[in-house]
Image (cartoon, rainbow, N blue to C red; front, top):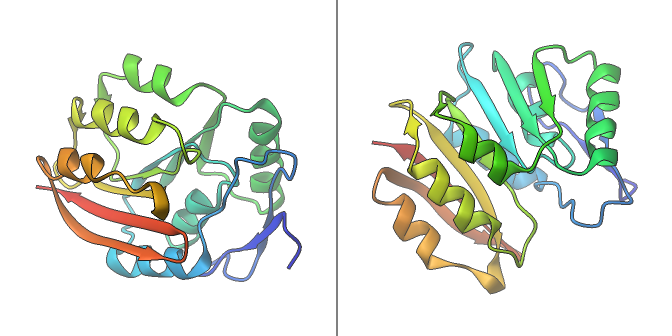
Length: 188
């Protein structure tokens, strides 16, 4: 499959192709086997509302909606990438979403309540964005049964992120595959 295409792995849009902005070199779509593991651990419910931070390709929201999530809000700071997500979701006839072209940290700082059932966090590697995002989310008012999924580069694995999240969440999965470590947590 070409480098700027990714396939939805489950639900009503299974096998449909999502194209993403190939000029944005920070986009690293979540691998299909990680998405399969994610959605095997977190059974999507029809009332689920998702927040997709650093959405990049939009594949995590597309997968969640394909599998039955009610709605997803996608944040993407890069204007060209933001426009590509909009184009692809329209092409796939995904209607239950909102895209926001804004910096994730600024969005979180001004958000008083984060009433989402599932939050995806996949920031560019080798930055402080993951720890900064987790700090802001943990300092906000989360729903009781909120799930959080995030990825980080294996060779720069930051145990501080896990320790911080572990104060309010149960870590359901923290596993390295290839060059990626992914974590799934559920609010206590």
